[in-house]
Image 1 (cartoon, one colour):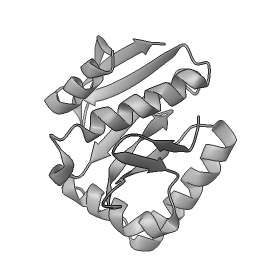
Image 2: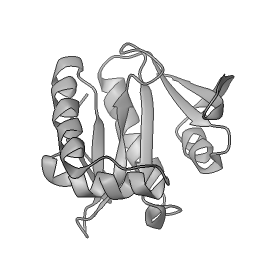
Image 3: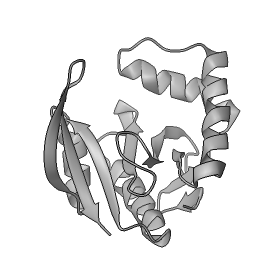
Image 4: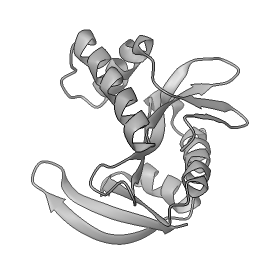
Length: 161
């Protein structure tokens, strides 16, 4: 997939080590323990290596006019496979409700189609109504559910390309 995408309002790009503080802040909004800045930098370096190896990655999302980091969106193996990866996205709460997730996910969907893939997945916690709305807008349908001890019900969503 392309590692640089542009939409009307957003720029999606490969992670840089300088993005470490932003990802830490975003993860902090989840209410989970954050890794150190150095560990976050190491994760970014590893993510960049894997992107080159397998041709997919999460990308940073920045608003074009403001230039500020608001989240990420991209393709991951996650609970799926490289041939049928998952689309994943997360935005700062302050960026919710403005259509940014849908806009970014649409660009990633187009990039996935350009790779010749035939299907994408997305796994979402059953509680995450906003993510279901984004997926519905870009053509995903609920497929089935699984249960994870720590996360509860996980809903698998699918989109044939």
